[in-house]
Length: 435
Image 1: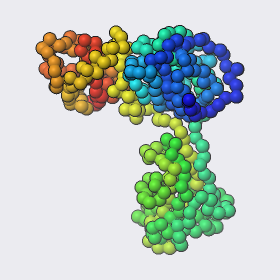
Image 2: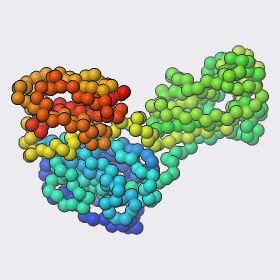
Image 3: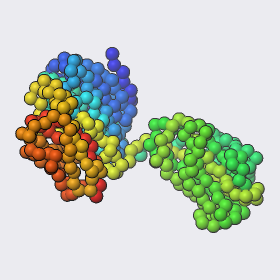
Image 4: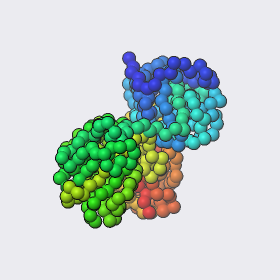
């Protein structure tokens, strides 16, 4: 039994056909679940190949998307080599530059991300995911242990934003709640049409207008646009934009506008506020509240719109921490001799651990070992970046407790440090380099 979530395509016959790739033995491992954007496919064992090209998700150029890759096992857990390709130029192969979008080896689930380049061709195209035991498959390969699944990706250059609400208050308050006596729809100082909402005085909720609950749990970013007209606001008197994510029990201030600093009376102003540092919920509320001193101190609000966006910031700085499940990554340079090696590795991991300090580091890392080791033990240290590439490898370290690793020439960011003995990982930790 399997469950799937995503957009179903009535037909994908217009897409160029692609080569065949599959596994021939899924007794021990298979692709169990793939999650990316609107695809959440618990596919189970498909005996080597799953054709899910009728299942699609939109991906937008220039954006990054989290992806979950989950293997299924027949008995024990093993190291799996995952590869993902997207046919960006829609020519029916995966051989062009940048079309291999992920290549990583791990035991268990992988949480990573993929980046959609700006040069990709708009429209429907193929995404192929291959999971092969221990060694990466090529895009058109038939191999023994593992599985392949194909999906459809809809590439678009339009920003994935939709309007939640738009109010000019010509007929009523819409989804806005009248706070009380000091909030009133009036035919005064509208930016457009004939009506606006007047806020006055400093009576707390009574001097405010608040939305009903907004369903924003799936939202990455929200933009609020509105116009206002201040009247008789004395210097230091102000109004604020606030947000609640618990249905109005508590509010946090987003921005405050102050008379004499941000505005003067008698003019229309237009504001655009971007909110991307809030964990939105389906009980999100937006409030505009006046904080003046008398009924004559007034703010007239008009032409409010709220837009939600379901895309991810493309900056490396904001995403390095989330790109990979660092405690599962195994670089390509480390190869299992056979499946029994996993049991040997687990035993080694129980016998020895390391303290690695300082972390974060400005340029050097030191090591203190705990557990059973001999003077003849020789270690290799690998520093892996968030793409899974080794940026530093030092071998034949015989006295690791006295060893200092120089990372002063390595760029700032999050890395994964592996300590190996006899080609087996004995410890692995996240390291932050911040100079």
